[in-house]
Image 1 (cartoon, rainbow, N blue to C red):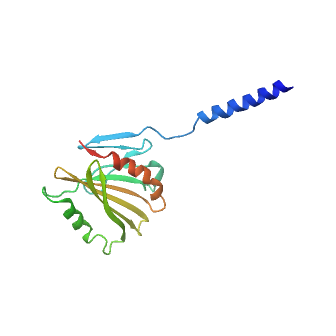
Image 2 (image 1 turned 60 degrees about the vertical axis):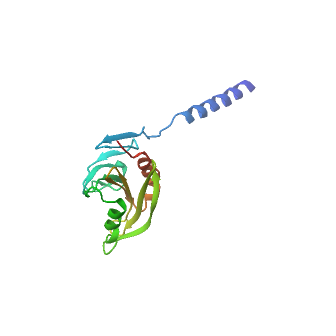
Image 3 (image 1 turned 30 degrees about the vertical axis):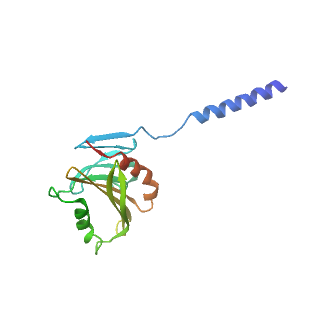
Length: 174
């Protein structure tokens, strides 16, 4: 009588152990974008998207956030058309000088971060019109300015921070 009970317990333990090794995790290996003199990694579940923003180089989006045919969570890399020799802080200041006046955008925070030994200008803002939050990072190197614009619905933005940081921290000029 004791042997069947021990056998059942051992089998139950094995089933639990094996089921812990099997996962329905749909995360994929990260992808790498390497074109237009830039490179960065992005989540493997995300896809290259149609870049319609002015001066956009590339856009990547979370396909699980598509509403009305457009993703609500995406990252766009832009290369603003500015004359060589302009300082990034001047271009940044000029851009935001009037941006928050009568546009429906509200600044949340502004600051600097360091990525790959480069000081990056950061501006986080939201739009009451489309209920989205934005994180714009301005990156300058070799007389070129790049803007990495992360966007998500206000309700989803914090949940996407890990994905945004993954992309931002891997960004490099080649």
